[in-house]
Each structure stands twice: as structure tokens, then as C-alpha cells.
Length: 446
Image (tube, rainbow, N blue to C red):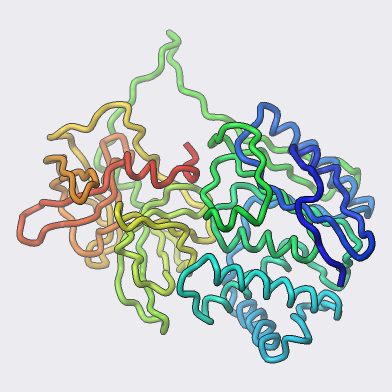
């Protein structure tokens, strides 16, 4: 096998990444793994130009290219069983490497070496990694490899392979992109919205600052079959939201919602079932859709001690299984899960006007497992508990409501239900929107 050498090629822009070609010399190939932080003024133009040029070269057979918005979830049991079998066969006979779907001897050996390196690094950066956690990560690596690169029978160390991903914040996904570099891919991570990775993980890639962070999405190029045949790229640029204006040109005033309209927002509140290692449900809680990429906000105490989670969504018969706990903060009692589904998030209040005692609120959650119940009340006070600012409110909640939304009358999340006192009537607490926005920095779309 050839050896790979990192950070020997200077890459300071998207255009520079698109141009580089790491050739093999004396058994060594230079590999690029770069994180570009923030947004430059012409980032969209550069990225779309890269899409067009590299897709054109791929159609001409000169290289392989993919730009990835998000990695798929591994849900089908037959796929889980297949990749688990590949991993277990490798554990029993490590010298044979990892053989997946037509992989030859050279690729099998390379995959085995790459997987060993990633699992060792995973053990280094994450405390108390069990064999089950190692296996789960390895299975994801192999599944994602097939999903992103495909056709391993045609794999060659001499081929130029370029992978671009956007706003990678989960350590397992980041380790997957490192895994790709270990089999010879050049990888560029466009961290335009934030860069919340652990410092130990960041050291694997070269960091390049190109501007300030922004929540504006990078447009995604869409390639139709007809466009591929003609060597053209069809680009879909997301529309930007504009404030509605009256005939006089002044912004329209915001209108409060009725409780019936607030109740309709229950479709963006989920029920979370917490499983132990045997798959048994040990507790339930609620969660709030906060970003369309599958992100669900809940309490840390809801997910704490869970081995995996099942998420139920109103008017959706499917149960979404996940073990993707993206981040958590025990002090704020906040946690973020991700499921493989596009979501309809509820906006988080931006603090344009201070909250006030007596202000009307609505709480939505699943008390005692009663899916998406709504109650009304008022803000009855503000408390600071263990250094965390809390909203005290009267809308009734019960066990299972934790992680649910506390809304203002405009349908915005002003807090997340966190605690209730059994000895007091309707004395309930919520972590406020300021802490929520701080915790979700880099994940919110607005």
C-alpha cells in the first residue's frame, strides 16, 4: 500500500481545493483534509463553480467528486446486519482486511488499516468507549463509505477522489471524513455556520479562516440526468426570506395566535422514548424540532443514561431510531438529538422584547406519555437556580413533559420545560431562550 502524507499542499480557498491533484511519487501521495471556517463574500460563487468544474471532469472520467449536505441514517435492518457481519469478520481475521461489496484485496487491506486508525482515535477522544460503541461506529463508516463513494470494485489508489461536506459538527461524521482521507480522498469541510468540534478532533485537519460564521445556507447544485448528458449543472439557490410590507412600505405588525393555532404547532413537538442496552424503554420525554436537518432539542436529564432513542412525530406512523446524541450540557440541562428526517422547526424567540411576569404562555409536551398535550398559563416569575436563569410559569406539566416547548403567543419558543414541583400547584420551570440560543449556536437556521 502507498503511504499518505497530510498538509503538504497549501490550500487556502475553495478554488485551490478544486485545483489540487495529489499524484503518487515514490510510493507517497499527498492528501488534503481542510476545514474552511466562515463565509467569504464570494463563497457561493466559488462553491458552485467548483461543482460545475469537478462534475464536468467526473463525467469525463478524470476524477470522482461528491458534495454532501448530510449523511444518511442507517435504519434498514438488512443493511445493519450486512455491515455488522463485515466488521465481525474483520475482527476475527484482521489480516484479511474489511471486504465490502466487491472490494478487492488492496482496498480490503486499506479499509482495515483506516478503520483501525479511526477507532483508535475515537477511543482517544471519547471517554469510556465500549466494544459495542466501536462496532457501531465501524458499521456507520462502512455504510457511509458505500453511500458516498459506492462501487468499491472500481476503487483505485491512483484515482483522484474529492469529497466536500458542509457544517460537520458530529464527531462520528467528522471521523468518517478523516476515514476517507485514510483511503486516499481529498476532503474539504465548509464550516460556514460554526465549528464546534473538540480540539483533539480539529487537529486532524488543517484550519483555514475565510470569513465570519453565518446561518445563510450554501446553495446546492442539482444535477439532472439530462444536464449530466450535456455536461451542465442545474443550480437551485434557496430563496431568502423577506419581511412582508404593507402598501405604505412599513413592516406589518406581528399578530398573536389563538390557542387553536398554537395547538397546531404540536406537530413540531416530539415524543422521545429512551432505551436501555436491551432495547427496553426506561423513560419518556418530549423534544422540540429546532432545525430542519433532523435536530431535536430536549433536556439532558431526559436522554441521560439512554443507550439509544426512539422518536415519534405527530401524524407520522414511523418510529425514528437514533443513537446520535449531538451535544449536551448538564448545567443548562439541554441536549440535542438528530434523526434521519427533514423537520419543521419552531422558531426560537430572538429576545426583541424582554419577557414579563403575567405574560401568557402555552406549554406543549407529552406528560405521562400522553402525546402532545397543550396547556395554557402565564409567566409567574424568573428564578436563578445553580447559576442558570429559569422562567417560572403556571401552564400545567407532568412527568414526561420535560423537553417540551414553552411558547409565547406568537408561536415562538421562549423556554424548554425542565422541572415541576409536585408539592406546589403549577409551579414549573423552563430553561429560557437565551440559554437555548447559546446552546444551539451553529445549528439554528435563523
